[in-house]
Image (cartoon, rainbow, N blue to C red):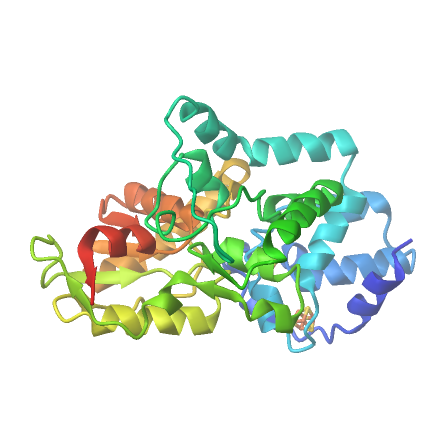
Length: 345
Ligand code: SF4
Ligand code: SF4
């Protein structure tokens, strides 16, 4: 049977379907079996013994974990927590769960392997203002410009892949290590929207105040394109990662619009998912590609020569979307664009 906390959450659902209306998977498949509302109905059916365990396990495997259902739920149901509970408790077996998780992490493991012999720069700065460097930048042994400014502790993964696969033990391990590294800091700076949202989940609202996106550090500065920038008088656009807050998105838009020599153009539906979802692409290539193509179509309408984003997984997803739609526009991390093309006054 279900645990009490989950039952309480399930009972709050009014079946309004706002989750389905905002779900990128529903948008493609038009199948309620794969939405939060569908999952909630199935779990309630299981609780009332109207549905068997077999019927519960059948669907509900194709969530992107984009959080849009949770963001749009008027009852504030933690749908991501319900998906994690489902994966932790209703997965066919622990062996399958581990296998699924390992496949999910394969792209990152591959990056670590490929960059194993690349020299790793040690950051010696010690301060209580710290930079949370995400797994992908770490796996690439990439030195970002934030590395040279702030202390970068050896954080564990933010835990999002473990949580969404239902590996709660590993999630707890990562979370505890990260909390330990964060606890004495004054400010934690992020450049990946997904890492920021995952780490914020460890703490209450008051504690979350010390987590900022790096753009908050430059929002009141005068930004200028470098003299030799190839983006002078060019149009650029920005893809909002699903896990980015509206506030961080607004800050980024204001910054990009304030740079005189570039033409920032907002995407139509900037919030729509890129379809990549970490490693979602590996398990569901068709749905992932259909979502990526939709995104590529909105990008094309802007005539932008450069697409920016602030999550390495989104950047990969956008590149994939460009490739399969034969658009081939350049895609960059916002952090790298600022570093390579901008002078901060
Ligand atoms: S948006 Fe929330 S309340 Fe509405 S159907 Fe979805 S989960 Fe239930
Ligand atoms: S997390 Fe995203 S993909 Fe998954 S059910 Fe919610 S809206 Fe749909």
